[in-house]
Image (cartoon, rainbow, N blue to C red; front, side, top):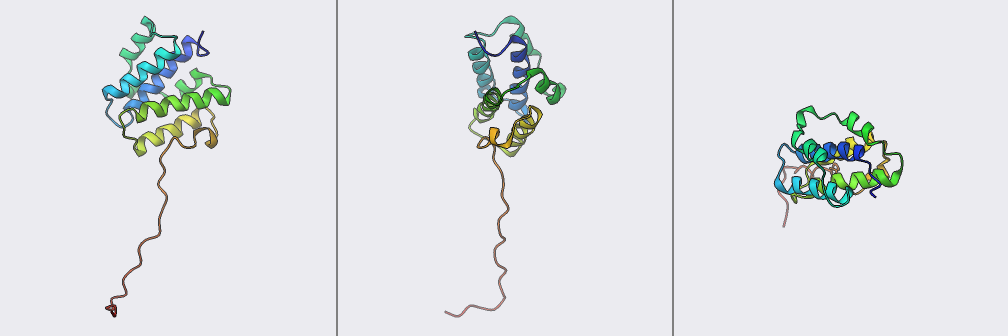
Amino acid sequence: MSKWSKDQLQHLADVLLAAAAVDRETLLEERGAVRDILAELAGGGIDAQLEQRLQAFRASDFDLAAAAAGLDLRDATQRREALGFVSRVTESDDVHDLDESDFIVRFAKAIGASPDEYAGLTVELTPSEPPPVPSGRPSKP
């Protein structure tokens, strides 16, 4: 028996589909990753209720706070697992962009995860030093 309840799987389906849509295009690879994850957690298959949820999902109607609350992830192990699933979906098309990283961070915060729990799952830009400004004098050989 899965440690994920049917209700949690419904909310996880929403989160994973939102993660797939966050870069404004949901590719077949991402949908396949969502289905694979849910099938694994459901014990090998997706039931009719979950299938209906997948078909009815609309990114424009997605409520991250409600989905996070519905997941009811109380321990770090399950939060890390959920974050790993989101990362798996965002990376399934072999492209991980800043919008996807931002979604992972927002989801992590919504489920009460610490930065350690999502470390390594996001891409961050670090400011670099600007190049030196030329002095305008020709350099001597």
